[in-house]
Image 1: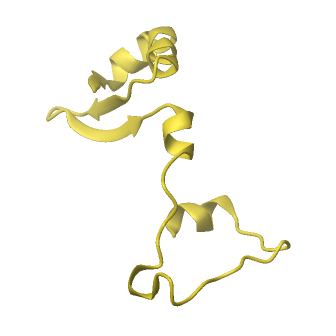
Image 2: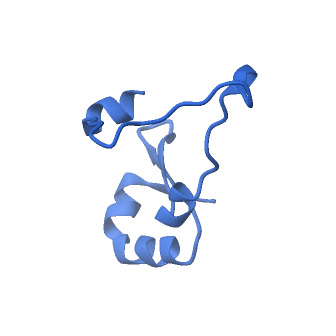
Length: 79
C-alpha cells in the first residue's frame, strides 16, 4: 500500500486515480507526525466485502430488510 501526504495526494490526484484503477490502495497521512488519517481503496474492493455473519446465531436465526427501509448516509456511516 502506497502512503502519501495530503499535499502529495492533492498535487498528484490524476496518478492517485490511476493507482486506484489498477487495484491498489492508498493511505493518506497528515500533520507533523504523518499520522495516517484514511485509506482510499478501489470501489470494487469495498463493494465486494463478504457479508456479515450473525455470529452465535448463525444458522439459527435470520433477518429480512423491508423494501421500504430507508437509512440516511450519516446513519449508515455511524452503524
